[in-house]
Length: 345
Image (cartoon, rainbow, N blue to C red; front, side, top):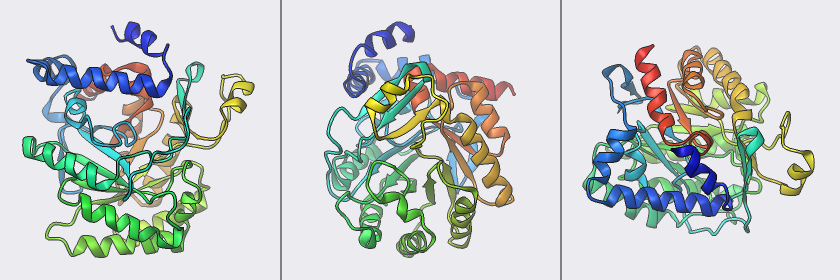
């Protein structure tokens, strides 16, 4: 069923297709019996799937990665597809239009995407308002808030932007993700350097510890880091007592792609996501687990396209997994397929 729907969607530009698909999902969810139909069709529950992590209860370990629902416009409808948790954002203090279009491209031969969205979002206050409405209706969803700085904020003032987002979203999300690794905001990845990263995390931890119930803080890192750079980040994360690492964001590399080099060159800059990242994501998960002796939970995000992919990541030491591009290419039944295989394992 999804194969036919995908053929129609793939006739449209990727960003337009995404909005159309989300509108269709939202209308279905809001229709009479729509929520029950979606849950029956796509959800799978089993006691063995639940995870206790970071002081939170996850009904299953399969989450939706940030970027899919930047503005928290479809959280409940997406949750009805059986996700164990939803990560919204990336959100910035002020609204941003993002980079000029076209800014999202399919590499069908590679089961991949290239995006240079540029943190297009409605701003943290609008997003927080939507999440408050969701919380009034549904207290049970596990929602993560992926936060970063505005494009025009100098790196020296980045911690202020992260703090604004933290304060605005604190009452509405269950955990935070510090995004310093998108390749589509100039200079952002420089914040992964040890001194800058330490300052941002320290600032957020101070804000967090002043709250009545501190939220888990995680860090999302780039897949393009060398092992020594990863180790420096892990050292900062352990000393700062972060709750976990998300490995990883999109990559700027284009190695081993089947898509013709001329098309790759014509597309230009942007972060690559999808199936080509699987092997590298797995290597990162294994490295982080080994270097931290399992002390730092890892969420595997990158290249997960099948139940086997998810099982491999979890067997390698990942605590949870996230999907994004796999959802676009494989369809919404992917979540259920993963959960069924995990329950049988």
